[in-house]
Image: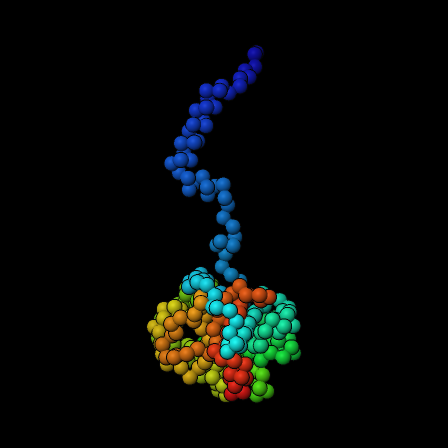
Length: 280
């Protein structure tokens, strides 16, 4: 019995197939490009709990619009660091003119910075005035509970003239809803709960780190925390409009792409003003 063997595909048939594919790609370019370029995990993945840090949402929500003009003698240069920077070269930063630093100590009630000792103590050892900050997650536990966790994780205050009061980092939620699922009034209550507990534990008013756009969206631009020093986040040539209640800022995070560690800050005053805040 003879075996049938298919012959080669005729050129005309190949031409028709190619023509149909070309027409489809012109009509549906998105489908073709999606098939050719697979989505990367970074594009969709939610950050791991504990990985949040100061300014994490600033570029995404507020963008970047230049840098302040040059180094200003009247504004002491500072930095803020977290575990993703690992062991920090504090001597390099000191030699570049940085004179104060904040280190992330904790987040929620579930994370302590494993590099805290090297970062917090290392900045002190080279001569800097140092402080610690807590990344708030108001959707996981109360403000008072997180304030206790922060103090117990190294975020307290010491009357040594070189330790700054702890900072509450309250900004966009990197793990979900921007305002952590809270109404504006509930957010204000949570913040007050944290601040009151921190002061009861340390005797100091905690610094508030935030961005005006987040503060307006998530607290209704509440103006009742002016007793707490303000650390404003804005990556631009000026600090811009401040949240209600504050006529001036104490610190300004002006970039996330500065030398050595990325996040760089300016104190609203020379080194003697940093020393005054540390002294209490």
